[in-house]
Length: 236
Image (tube, rainbow, N blue to C red):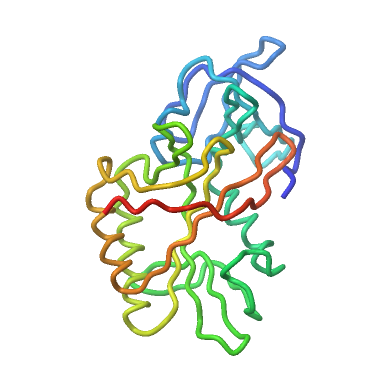
């Protein structure tokens, strides 16, 4: 998936109010960019970081820049836009390019289920039972090469695990898919110390038959592509 507009580099001044970030462009101008990430962005919001912004000329948008990437030493990147994974995965699922989730005739995003929730993707057809796929964007890394989720307490994420467990318990196929939006990680685990309730809900969901899939991404200022499966280290 290519970005709609070529990204431009900038320096982060500060991220605040969850969805706003002040940045300095290379020509010295200071602008405010939209941050499409409700999480804590732990380790990704320090002043002085080199970041990449996507400009836009949409008159309906108040802010003319969106923060898309953080650049790390060694040419590595982290994607901070939590909307990117689902856009990319929808195309990959429809093309049958996601290992473990192939052979379905229909891919439907945002289908209502559970307790007033929407599943990210419902896969159906192909002579198979319906498959419910919940997607989480993973951006935290506190140990070299190891990605972690979540980066803050997530009651919503815990609720989703409970609903997936109900699907599995009822005989359906339920999948928790973690997409690592970092190019510097080769494995993943849960940040159980950050959210003990989420870790407990994950253990219960796994015991109920919920499957775990974990993939990395190919990230660059040019775009985002689905990478390969990476090992998941269960901390429980």
